[in-house]
Each structure stands twice: as structure tokens, then as C-alpha cells.
Length: 231
Image (cartoon, rainbow, N blue to C red; front, top):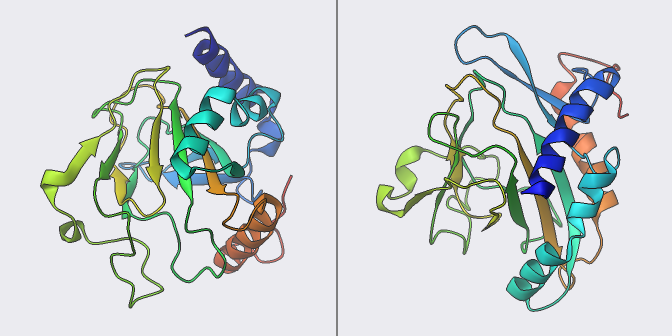
């Protein structure tokens, strides 16, 4: 629990000391609209390990690495990391799979380790996963489909990740998941670290973020032409 307390302090530090980074045009940051008022809410630092030595250490923590290596049966490579704050009123995410169909070269071994800072509950919009669907895309014929209809998964396969700080959960990038709005009065913070198997492309973290930023620039071009940056 001391480590989670330190991670909570680090999240507070980042919010206080990195206000200069929290900008709608900074590709490191994303915002969501308050589920009721539409007010913009800061959501995430993605990536975060390059501005947080503590988060960087956690991506290499032996306990996490041993777990992920055992799942792969080979060494894992760090692919992505992000610190999500999920402010009160944040709307959550509809059902989706994390691996994009149309993204050439995206590792199919992609999996994510969820490290909760605050206990995820139904009130604050915990992650809900649906087991048994991680072997392929639910709609392989439609490469542009990202958000999925709720009726494409069975309610009986739902697992709500009602964790305690200090727990971890691991799920595959093809595992359908969603989250409800944060209806509580406090943030629901979590550190998400994603990996790929060494044999599935090796170290491709830097290439991923180049491609990811290109994707974000294209998506934001209509609202913020020529004004996006990464810092």
C-alpha cells in the first residue's frame, strides 16, 4: 500500500506541477465532456512515464514483468503507458476493443495491466470486461468500426473490475470492455501499462507514439488546424 500511496502522491504532483502541459492541443493530453454539463474535463497523460520517474519504474517493476512474461511465455516489451484521472462527471467509454482493426502492424499480443490508484467501484465507473471474446475482432468485416453495440456480447460474461488499490488486472487488447460515468464526488485514478510480446514486433513503443500522434492530428485537424503539438 505504500507504493500505491506514493503513486497517488505522484498523480497529485503531476496535476499540480504539470499544469503547463494540460492543454487541449497537447497530444499528450485528452479531455472528456462532463456527462451532464458538457464542461471539458482533463482525462489523461498519455504517455506519462517520460514525465514521471515513479511511473517509469513501475513499467519495469519485476512483479509486473514476471506476470506479463509468464502470460506470453517470453519477454514482454513496453508498448504504451497512461495515467487516467477520470474526474467526477466523466462519461466513461462505450463498449470497444483496444486493438484497432485498420492499424497496420499493431501488435496482436497487446495486453494491458491496470493498476488502480483509487478503488474502482460501480459509482465511479469501474472498467467492465467481457470474458471469452479475446480471440478475434467482433466485427472483422468493418475496419472503421471501433465502438461496439452492447448486444454483441453476452451479459453473462461481464466481469466488473472492482479492485482494491494494490491489486492489478490484466486483459487482452481484444477483450471487449467499457466503463460507466463517474457519478461519485472523487476522481477514479488508474495507471494503465500496455505491452507486446518480444516476438510480436519487439520494441515498437517509439514507433507507436509517432503513429498515434499522426492519428490524433488527423482527428483533431478540423478543430485545431496547425496548432497541435507534443510536449
